[in-house]
Picture 1: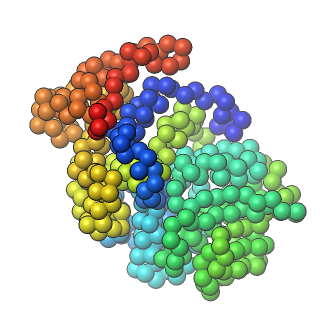
Picture 2: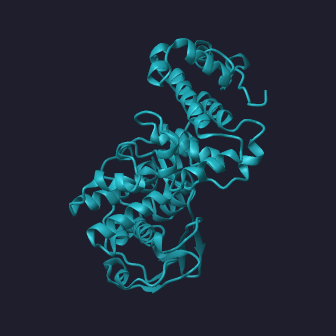
Length: 391
């Protein structure tokens, strides 16, 4: 899909309402204002790992053992639009560099990366008609791809500065991750400028790194370290060059709205909930597993949730109800089968739990959620009440 096709994308109001159901489940009325002020866990789409895993597989790294050692679930290899803590990527790259003895791992993995492996984010970049549009697509869609860091463009007289900065605490533990992102940024320019293009000026947040100067893509660059943000300079003459077509066109228009609705949460509860959902590939996680993946102690996680009046157990319960709402809305699976698949002992227990959080029985929810739309929106009777904790 080219960028100018965006107006053809239709928003399904029923899907948007389902997203609202999920929001109300995890942010009851009495907590919304407070949660909005709580620092979220920074999350990134699991597809960020795909080029890294591709590179490590080529050098013979036992991938599953590496994932287990760094607290990254194997499911992210197949569910690439899932969200995982961004710190997990940095942790995985640091451990892989140590095990394999590759001091420039981040830069090398990024230099060999296929941008189409970055899921929908990569496809939206590659489908842009020109480099100018590709850069804009990168900046515009980055918040849906990752909540750790931001990207922007700075116009200068003869060139444009393509910038990135991590928003979480930055130290040497982020060196490989930062160098990896740098090479992805160069890869975006190469979609139009060709595979041999090299930036003339590069600035990095990381401290001095001698091995980085030996990376081919940086051999002609003036590199400065320890800067407030990372950037590469792109000559203006390149901006209107056409982006080479993707080798395998894929229709993405029908996926964009759902992808945007599932963007990394901007609050603590939402981000922890998204991690729980990512870990629920094969059963719901206990508090120890969730804390391990988040990179914090069980006590820290419990304390942060308690500050907003929640527990890990309550978030897992809400995740189960949210999963049930999706299955009821989008599949014809029998209600009993949904109940059993989500860990409820029988139909009655599931119905009571569902009614408590949603305000109606599962069968009524399914019927109302599938009611015909009127004038592009759900009729009032098609919207069952959402019950807040303080109701």
